Length: 245
Image 1 (cartoon, helix red, strand yellow):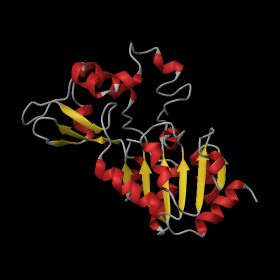
Image 2: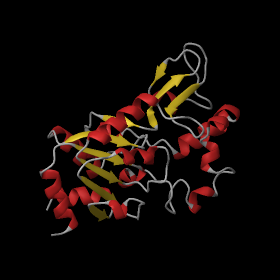
Image 3: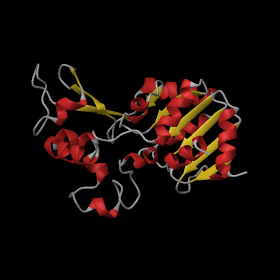
């Protein structure tokens, strides 16, 4: 029995699944990941800007060099044309079948919701949500995409900030607590499309006390040796193969 067949059987026989995912879930939707050669931190991207991504996506850089922040943000972090891939749709279908309790994601692209998932815990926020720092007026993605320079509030003129967690900022406590609860109560935890290198998000999987740990990733992760099932490969291809045997 292949790993894909084992995964299909596990999904068929499980009812309390939680999925914990990262940037690799969206690479097949043509959104770059972080640490591959073509990724945000990769050698091909690093030469374009004078500062590393950790600096340009930090809270202090946003405050001190707001225009440069948005130039980088629009260029590297926002992909309005991206569409969900087979992994997003498969997870939404598992939720619709009553098998998947929640998606816990490090991604900020909103593709899980676009595919139909309802219980999505976005640890690092979403590019689709934005708010005025002065009056907290809410803005969708179109407002800031259609702005020039620094996006400004139509009501008070304040700077519009993306509702994403920047470096030097803490995770939302309510989202964090909900993620811990779902992971702790899950019978099956699927880790997919993440190198488990980003903390504190990656530390959440330590709360898992269930029966089966599944890891689906192209490259090795620190949890491979702990996995009951390890499937190596692009996660969209893996889910497509088990839905189309």
